Length: 353
Image 1: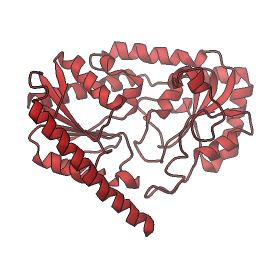
Image 2 (image 1 turned 180 degrees about the vertical axis):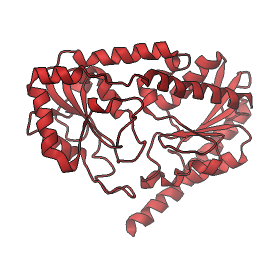
Image 3 (image 1 turned 30 degrees about the horizontal axis):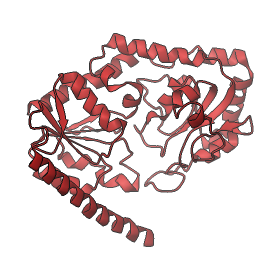
């Protein structure tokens, strides 16, 4: 009960705090007529900074070749996310005349802190995008991992052939010489293990998976969770891909097991040339990933999984045979190109409005 009370107190305080900051920003931009001479003005809500915000900005800039300003003065497009105040965003979308793009990189269906957004604001945004499989007219599936695997300047104009070249490059990473057993990079144990999700019966923690795998060999943990390795920051400048190139395996567990909820974790493992040990959505991205090339962690089959991992680690021939399997499906490049082509067309329509 106390936790629920504190949850809603935090929600209310977040609404008033962000509303005040929004009004200050809005007034300042209108007084300055910020970006008045730009071809396109983009307004953000629910984003502070970071690669996801910059990704859309760069994508539009490469796509249109236009001069783009970030401004709330007569915006051409509002880009919003699930990280801001839900109530404030509802008001903004109701009052604003500009078209809007809502994008979420989080699990909306089960995670309590984002569950208000699970209907994608009930059709309010002009375009809504996320992990889910939804038939809503204003919704396009656009999972977050696309932004991690493909830079925006590449995605804006990439052909199927260029995407295939990128996938071929990633395929070769697994043959990089390996000197270490496994890595687990995480800041916390996952929401499912902490019972912060609704309707999720599995409670698999990253710590539990790591503990089981340490019975085979040492697992390097350079993140906050189970920290025992400083080299990710000290030697690799926090570049996960460069760090992972030296490992045979990477533990990549999602925050919860939800259909469609596939984040960058498994794709960073693959991009780093490791064999992913994955827990999360069943059959993750089946049109993109070869499911036979992934080791799935199942609480009911721990001993069988440990035996398989140990064999691939100790037996060079067995590992070589496993790695000869393609990581991506034969149609992966076409599927990925379709995601980007849809986004190009949708953004052009929104900006024409």
